[in-house]
Image 1 (cartoon, rainbow, N blue to C red):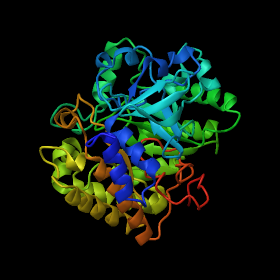
Image 2: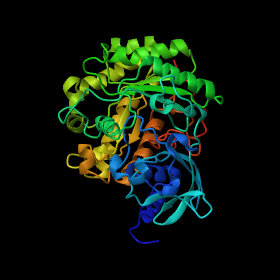
Image 3: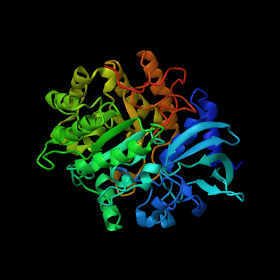
Length: 445
């Protein structure tokens, strides 16, 4: 092994943090830095046998579509599964973030078997998601199910991005790590279908197809999400816009899926409307804990709501949904983004842990997405390498320790916890929690 190689760094962290599953170390490195794909590992888009990447809300890539080469024409898989290899990895589901310059590469060997290679050595077998039967059927208007209602987390979650842009717009309002608006623009520029506002009847028709052909009932939850709404969309404010989809889904498919909504931290009467519409889990994302960084990185949210009010609303929403069913996300890693972020891992972990303790002390269990530094965003452009892997590994350690301190267990609506069992694919928080508790397949009241 070469001194200074990526392999040496990863193995050093596995040795220093033995309580963090080794699977999570690799998963976090792939999420933070991306993975390259040999042509032999790409999909044949919607006409092939492999479920292709759907670009369900953000690009989650380390390059624009024109920079991805063949991966822009033949999409990579939505996710990959790692198993085996010299580290004897347990089944690990990883969301695909493409980076042609990554030291990690997925390629087929001489026998056609896919593997993950690091520094030129095969470190794991790679499984790819099979094309689900419901993706082979189209809506009556010709749109694909993948465009209207893609599934992620190995089929567990239907991801309904019903508003593909954000009304926080421009440098003075957009969150500095978010490429939702650029992702919309790049797909339209490439001539790809990318529906801006999804018609509720289209969503219901796509869900009918999924329900008909998902005979194993692998899809267990849906998430309603999209950009922030500061005014109205189709004459509706944010609570009514996202809520009316939930109402229609619950009326058509009562109890079929766990209903979740990702929206801003709204006033309590608006949150009650979500509940009344049939939503079971509310994700009012707090993005980053530190006050100065929130103000700098989330200028629109600071301007329209403000950090303190945002946090008050999160706590108020627990009175509507119950604390365990309020699960705010943060973007793990932006704490260390130059030029404004913390310069040491110690400082960043201390700040984020303060936020975890604040919410968990109220019975609210946040979750996180591992930051992907997309190059069209200000923070991605300034920090193409993202945050250090050590930050992500120590965050997993701090997250589990804080949950233990407050006697909390894995949040509902995420499938089973534990290494070898978790399906949540955009961070390793579920992979890092104990696997001995029963999976919580429904929101608790």
